Figure 1 (tube, rainbow, N blue to C red):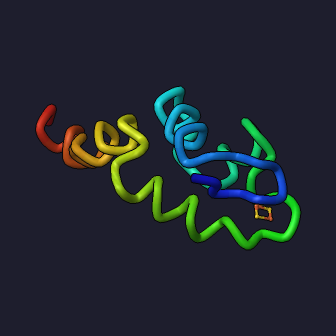
Figure 2: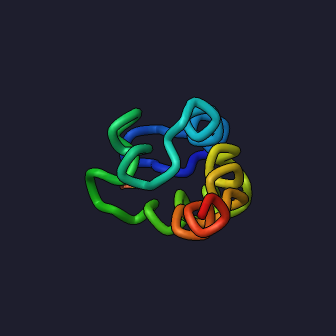
Length: 74
Ligand code: FES
């Protein structure tokens, strides 16, 4: 299924880029140009990223805030 018809980018390709570390629509655009022409696919890309396509995002969100870790060290 195509996510970006301007550049022929599929949902599977977006997922693969997300797995490779692209966690934002801008990073997806850098990887495959999706979202850089008409912009009509950006919301679909955001939705894909928000549905767990980016494993690193979950890891980042699970970490406690830096200040909390500093408080623990004190
Ligand atoms: S559909 Fe993706 S930039 Fe147009």
